[in-house]
Length: 461
View 1 (cartoon, rainbow, N blue to C red):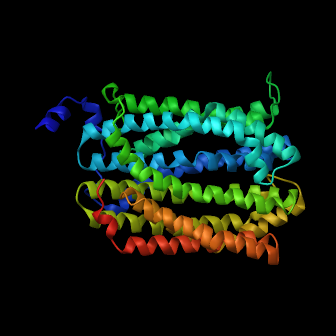
View 2: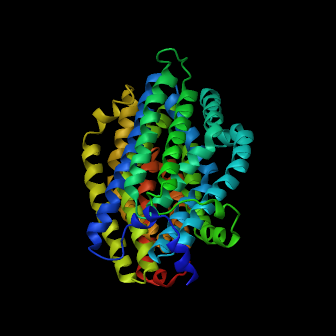
View 3: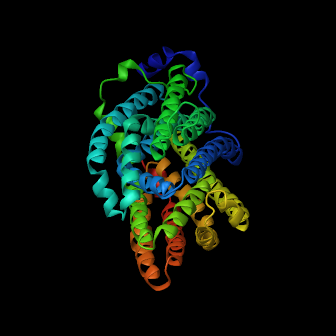
């Protein structure tokens, strides 16, 4: 009775715009959610590729400077990365259960958690950048440039982390088309500001890598403005409310119960990427630059995976909330099969044209040859990565964040890192690419075995 009275008082737009995902054709609904999310990720990865292009125009060691700085940033913000999945899963479950009051409460509690995490991470990062970068093998020009890049970037850490977390909540409410528009705004601002500030177009001084960092902050800030507009106008079906501003420790615990394992899952590959940087840097500047370009192109193909994973996680969360585990299972398998197939096709096309594509980022023939070899070796792993990441996100959407975390940690530290260390000692840089494939296939096998047990269908949030 009380919940009904609360819901009756809610503004009509918030209720009217909630998307129904617990009835109807599952593949069509997965596709309708995945397309805007995939397009959104494609836009973001294109922006990152443009950044790499502009850093090539800056010259010197700008490309590996930004790559190394970005890798360290991902390690440091790992504790916050799970908030996106935690918030999305909790909101999706409450939306599926038609519990508007708790869905709205979860939105505000996520905002409070972002604020709580941002300050200590900023302080630790600002003081520790030089030491951490040296651990990664940075020295000379790369070390100096990466410190300047990161210290500029962390000025806007709240905006940089608020955007993905709150976008995840909007997707959990079943409205990925809004996050597509929000992130399009982010990318437009970023794509304009980075070359202007980095290269010094017009009246602006050339800031180099610091311009790339400042442009990223400006783009994220614009995206956060868009997020709050969508939420506060009720277009997403959920909204932050002042009456929920007081910390609700029980709700935070629900969010963190999913977020912390997911953050650990993210921390593991982020730390692994830092270890890879250490191994790669030992082979010299050309290999480091080739790996930096390859890593950006490899990330480009995560668009399909991320879109399908987000769609599957949203469908799983809402259908479990509605008491329909069979629909949730169909959604997960639909998304994973689609991600594996489409990723393989797209990756094969680009790998076939590797040299002209790589020529957009560097004119060094040795760097191009190294990166082209990396792309060729990585082809078999892309389907496994697509499948495994979607199944892992589907488990997270069900509230089972521990299993994909353990699978990710095991694949990286039991398979991928040891293989990389062993193979690079035997066959040089080629061992890096081969170890990536081995890790991705091991992760896909582990999360699939866990998913097939069906225990995730019984989890409570």
